[in-house]
Image (cartoon, rainbow, N blue to C red; front, side):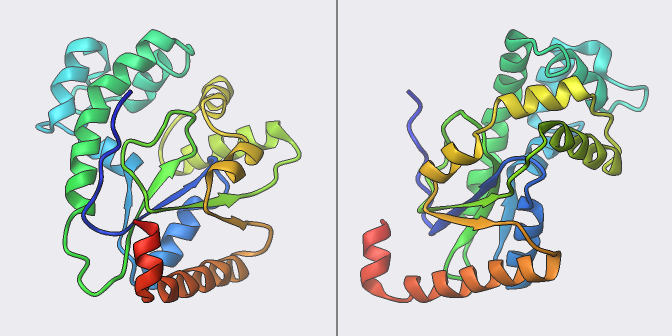
Length: 224
């Protein structure tokens, strides 16, 4: 069993199933002055040419390297999640996760510069978190139609220049918590059931209340 990494700063894990509003929540926290790191973005950064995960991936899947030397993430996704190949997915995780975690630890350990906590976005994966959070905030949206959720994932991928198939989206969802299990493992839950301005307001009110808790020495001691 992998031991959780403890960060010297107070850490909030911001999590949620894909397309539930986690990124919007992160944006709202950033607007409030909180530093929020995105583990998915860092995982992409460490796959860039010259970065630590690049050579590992190029060695494992040489055919995913494009003419300009960058990684074809659509092809890499097809060879792993697209085929729901557990061995290939595990190999990809082993090639990227240690480097992504090391970079995340570095960023989360930077001085808070006046903030009371630092946050990081993490998908609601069934695998345990490597970085030990002091508080887990989950964003939940109730999807009555799973197919609609898959479509939302595909549309978001297209908006980001990614080609995600229905099968790939389904494989991603299979590896994440359900709404019910996410509730069980989270310290706070915010329901995303309103328009963006009101939802951002919910996030801001949570942030203000949480900072007030952290200003109380007894609360800080209790969370450690």
